[in-house]
Length: 136
Image (cartoon, rainbow, N blue to C red; front, side, top):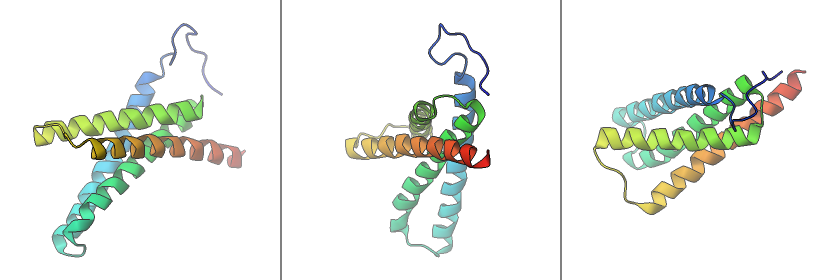
């Protein structure tokens, strides 16, 4: 059962949980990127697959963000999933800008990763609701 919140605010104090869930999803994504980089470094995968695995790690990280946030808050699942996916994208983009000292100017890549992150968060939130209903 969801805790009562301040009705005057839209998210009602849920932002810290969203941020913490997004950081957990970001950690999942970074670990997957490191794992795929090791496979490429060992020669098990060609270098051209690195972009594919970057997208896959973004999907799985945003999925984890949406899933964890909805499992914790149990409130408006699809909205939380989309918001955590967008927050995941913003954090991922800022980390990329910090480590590479520039922002990407490629509009297509920007939009693709935004859509991937938002959709991954939404699917993760739907999966969390589906799992919760099965466990009852």
